[in-house]
Every structure is written in C-alpha cells, then in structure tokens.
Amino acid sequence: MPGYNTHRRFNYAVLLIVAALFYFRGIRIFDLVQFLILGAGFYAGTEFITPDLDVKSRAIKRWGVFKILWYPYLILFEHGKSSHNIIYGAFVRLLYIIAIILGLYYLLFSALPSDFMIIPLGYVITFITGIILANGLHVVLDMLF
Image 1 (tube, helix red, strand yellow):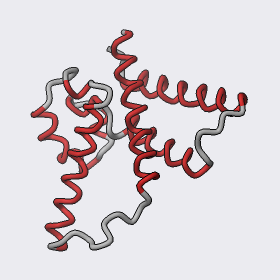
Image 2 (cartoon, rainbow, N blue to C red; image 1 turned 45 degrees about the vertical axis):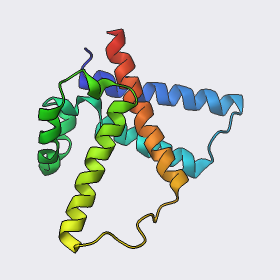
Image 3 (spheres, rainbow, N blue to C red; image 1 turned 90 degrees about the vertical axis):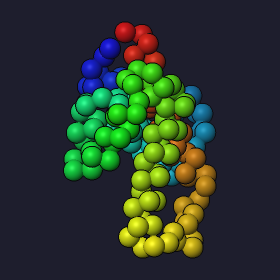
C-alpha cells in the first residue's frame, strides 16, 4: 500500500487537475465559497479524517494531544476493512468524531445549543462531500497498488 505522503500528493494532484479542467472548460458546479468549503473538507479528509486512522499512522499523529480520541476507533476497526470503504468508512469516521465532540460539549455545558444548526446545511453537505472525495481517492490508490 502507498505511504502517507504518496496519498497526500495523489489527492492534491487529482484535486488540482480536476479543478483546472473544470475551470478551463468553463464548468461551474460551485461558487467560490462552496469551492473553498469543498476544499476544506478535502483537506480535512486528506490530512485528518483518513482511512488510515485505524492504524498508528501519521494521520493519527497529526491530531496531536487529541489523538487519544482515535484509540477506540483504532481498536474497533481492522485496517483495510470497513474503514477503507469509500462511503461507509468516511461516514463512520465523521459520526465517530461528531459523537465525541457533541458528547464533550454536552458534558461541559450540560445541554446542546438551542440553535444547533448554525451553518447552512448546503455548506455542511459540501464539506462532507470533500471528505468523502478525499477518502475515496485514498481507497482507490490503495486498490491500485
């Protein structure tokens, strides 16, 4: 399987090539804000919420002191199995980290905020799409090598 930096270079190269092709062909799927949100999700999916969080990898080390949050995930999921499913794996990781964040928030403040959804849903979906795209490229590269 390709190494961490190979995955990173591959993901960013594909993103740049596809963005350039869309730009030069005049294809406008997103406005600038949506593209930046997609890019932020893609970055998060490439650097922090990768399929390799089920092993002691550089991705886990990038979390710094918060890497401890991923140890239960590391124990629960065998490397290369469900965590490397293009869509299912990304959603499980997102649900996992969201559950932890909301749980910690609830413990600290004893309630969830009343205006829970402060970010427009379209932006959330675009961000998650970026994560899924990055995770999908990771899995595709693993399948090729």
